[in-house]
Amino acid sequence: MSKAKKKTTAHDEISRKEAIKKIGDFGKYAALTAIGTTILLSPKKAQATSEIDPGWE
Amino acid sequence: MKNSIENIVSINLENKKVIWLEKSNNYMVVEKFVFEIISKIQKFNNSKKVIEWISNNMKLSNSDAKEILNAVQNLISVSKKKQENIDFKFETPTSFFSEKYYKINGIYFLIQFQSEKVTFYVHPKLAHLEVEKQEKIDEKLTIFSQNSYIILLENNIFMDAWKLEDFHFFQGKLSMLLISKAYQKEEKDWMGIFHASAISDAKKAILFMGNSGSGKSTLSALLMHHGFLTISDDFVPVLRENQHVYNFPVGISIKEKSVEILKDFYPELNTATSYNLTQKKLVRYLTPKKTVKQNFPCKAFVFVKYQKEETSVSLKEISKLETFQKVIPETWLFPSKENANMFLNWFSKIPCYELKYSDNNAMIQTVKQLFSDEI
Image 1 (spheres, each protein chain N blue to C red):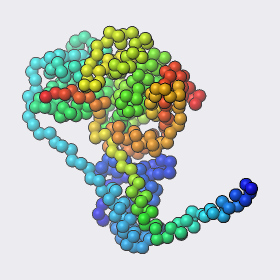
Image 2 (spheres, each protein chain N blue to C red):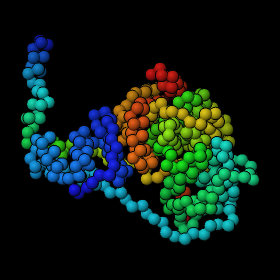
Image 3 (cartoon, rainbow over the protein chains, first blue to last red):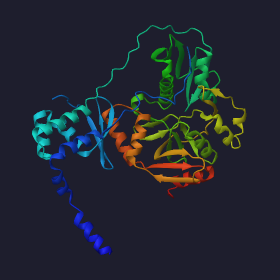
């Protein structure tokens, strides 16, 4: 039973190279999507302590 | 070429690339192929060549490659915001509400406070460092408010002015001046200032981080009672030269709800004055223990969360990328190529953990194990 299952899985697997080939024309969109996942992080603009609000005039 | 890149620094972090851009002083987490394209923009400084490279390497048509290049260029085109220059005249006060002398790491400071209000917001954290009047001082700081600004002078020279809503930046600068003078350093010598509580076993330091209300200061106080040192609370300086965490011995601010938990360990909290820092934040200050050594290498970053009715304690290693994203927006990092390089290398070697606890004793045992490499 488990042997049969294993066989099917092996049959379904494709290599990365093949996957890229299959994607074909979609390469550009995949790349644009990946560019869109970029995370931009800005450190604090100056040294700071925890925020407090003196509430002055 | 639309954008030329002056300087970038990069490092591999898990399956991504982290880069620092000099123009904006921003850090970016990108896919590795995006970094490749950025490197080519920097190397060729010629759109045609970069498009050709993208086209060949990613098997794309020229027009698609151009589109990819544009998208990457948009990422790096965040220009540096111009700093607002404050242009106004001020009059240095001639009389003061209070003049106080402090000693930090053998250095004598005189701080002149123009008003009771300024004294109220600055002095309590430093009160335990106050000494009697000195004939000779190393540094004089003058603090006053005028025209809705808070102004700081260093040895009678104008340092900066802040709008009152930026009071935490004024406090940051004041802390920076104190720490730099205390260790005979300049601002550019520090790698960064971390928003954390730094605890030490007298050999190494662990930086405990977390959102406001996550229990950082309470945890610090509990650990201090069990033999650890609180080397800095809220404002943790790390020096670039040795990448060590430095002792900044200001008072540990304890919120009113934590006083209940801590008063059995620290009876002095019962009689300590409460300060109403904001409408919601009523705090008392706890004096940190004196340390012999002033600086320690960093052993770990720990994100802490007090969770009522959860398992007594759990500590698990977490992703560095996840930690990086939480740490950067809360941190000041000196903006230079050398520093960005040093910081990224340092950060990539430090393990990151998440600590959730509901039981104080279990938490203390876990931190002890972490310090002694039993985890």
